[in-house]
Amino acid sequence: MFDLLDTYHIILALVTHATFENRFKYGFFTSSHHIVHP
Image (cartoon, rainbow, N blue to C red; front, top):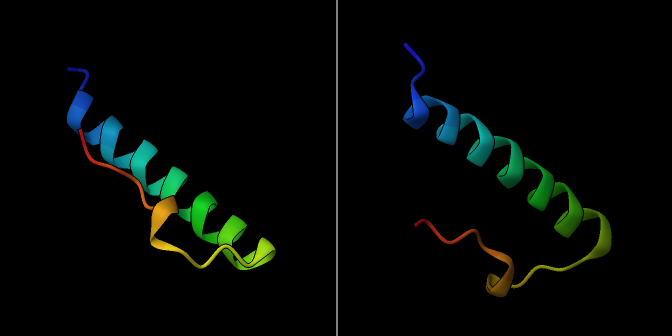
């Protein structure tokens, strides 16, 4: 069975990791770049 919730968590983790790397790389250490949960 295709578990949408697991897939969502995987995507969220990937996006969060990418966002953290971008913030670290470009110095955007602000709360405005946080991921908003639906």
